[in-house]
Length: 390
Ligand SMILES: Nc1ncnc2c1ncn2[C@@H]1O[C@H](COP(=O)(O)OP(=O)(O)OP(=O)(O)O)[C@@H](O)[C@H]1O
Ligand SMILES: [Mg+2]
Image 1: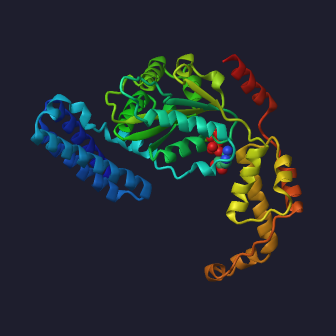
Image 2: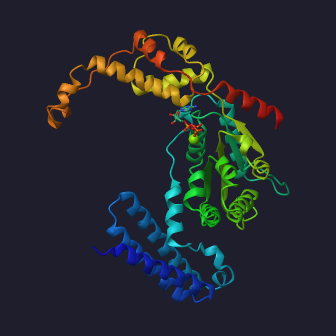
Image 3: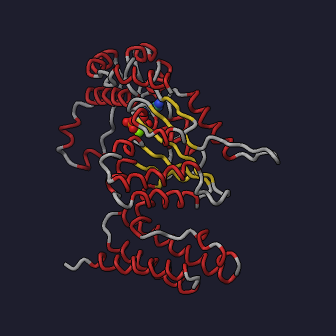
C-alpha cells in the first residue's frame, strides 16, 4: 500500500520551510498562508494515524500552525511589531521537532499532598519558586534560584517532586529524559534543547524537568565531540537564562540524577540549589503506608508505626511495591473464587463485588521477607561523601 502519510509529511515540511522563508523576507501574508497550509496537512496526517496519542500531537501542531498564521495576520495588519520582532511570533521549528517537543509536554496531576516526607525540601522548592514569581519592590534586584538539582538513590521522589512543583504552579510541564534526548535525537539534540526552551518561554510558567541529566556527561566521550559540545553549550546558555529575551514568562528547570559526581562542573555550577532526596525516614515511611494503604481504602491491622520501623532501608518505590504485595495477598485470600470466575466471562465478572478484608500481621511478615532493600550501602556512603565535598 502506498504510504500516503509519508508523502503528506514531505508536503508538510515543504509548507513549513516556505512559511519560514516568507517570514524571513517579511512577506507576512504568504507566510500566514503557508502556516495555514501546514495546519491543513497536519490534520490530514492526524486523520491517517491509528494511535490516539500520535493523532493528538498532530492536532496540537496544527493548532500551533494556525496560531502562527493568525499572529502574523494580526500583527501585519496592526503594523509595527511584526516587522521589527519576527522572532517573537513563536515560529514553529521543523514538524518533527515540534512533534517531539509537544510529546514531552504534560499537565501534571500530582499534588504536594501525594508526597510522603520531604517536608523541608518541599518548603525549599516552594519558596524558591515563590520568589521567581512574586513582584519585587521598585529598585530591588532579586536573583531567585530558577534551577534546582535533585540527587539521590532511585525511587525516592525526585520525579514526583518535579511533577508536584509543576502542578502546584499550574505550569506547563516538559518531562525530558536526557538519555533519550542524547541517543534518539543524535545530531538534532542541540537544536531540540534550544527549541524546547523557546517553546517553554511561550508559556506563562513552565517547568522543564531534565531527568537523568548525568546521561549528558556519561555520553560526552562516546558522542561525536562537536555534537556533544553543542548540546552542552546550548543547555548552559538556557540554564543561564542568557537566551531569555522576554521577561513575561518564567521557565524553571529541575534536573535529577542518581550520580551527581558524574556531572560536568559547568552544569553543576548552574544549579545554585543542589538538593539531596534521601531514602525515606521513619516519618516518611509512615506517610507512604498511609498513602498507599489507608488512603486507598485498605485497613492495616498491625500498627502502622511497627510496619514503618520494619521497612527501614526501602525506597519509596520499594514501599509502594510492598504495599501492592500486601493488598494482592489480602485480595486473593478474601476472593478465592476470582480465577474460576474469570473463566465464566465478562458478565459474571462485572457483576462480582470484590470483598475487602484487613491486611494482617501475617501478610506483613510474608511481604517483609520478600522486600529486601536494593539500594547499596556503598551508594548511600557516596552521597554523604559528595555532599561533604561539594
Ligand atoms: N516521597 C515519596 N512519596 C510518595 N511516593 C513516593 C515517594 N518516593 C517514591 N514514591 C513512589 O515511588 C515511585 C517512584 O518515585 P519517583 O519516580 O519520584 O522516584 P525517583 O527518585 O525519580 O527515582 P529514579 O531515580 O529511579 O528516577 C513513585 O511513583 C511513588 O509511587
Ligand atoms: Mg525519576
